[in-house]
Length: 179
Ligand code: 5GP
Image (cartoon, rainbow, N blue to C red; front, side, top):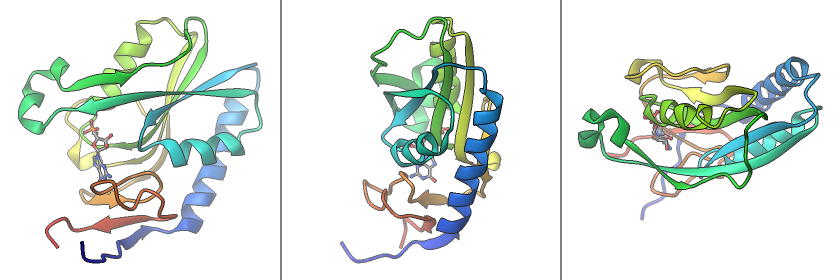
């Protein structure tokens, strides 16, 4: 595979500053919470979740879920668009839950996840998303803490991949899949 260098869209420095700002807001909002459960969605959220969780100043714990998304052609059947392939280890009933996602594109994945988690009756349920693409949104989805809004381009880095490549880039970059 030929070497491609993704073009910088959001620099490492801007991401670090944004993570610190989000962590400060979340720490203030949950100041009275004795155990905030951060739910990371694999694989993409693992880097954002580890940076964010280390910057929080409140008691917190971490759990993970993995989802798989079907192709666009199957998305007409709204409920059939997303499938869970790994569930949480802990029961979240009565817990304060913050879902940590790398990216919201059409919104199907996060809206599926929120319906699924809400049915388990947590004490509260909010979301923290590193990047979203507003132009691509097809379904409403709640984003309580947002890093960046970006245009309709394919981004990599900070956990986001292109065919499993570039997840560990420290910045968010753009690749052009046709290149
Ligand atoms: P949704 O369309 O359900 O909001 O997002 C589905 C999934 O598509 C995301 O969780 C992510 O895995 C993937 N995705 C959408 N846009 C991008 C992108 O620009 N870069 C990468 N790496 N993944 C994306």
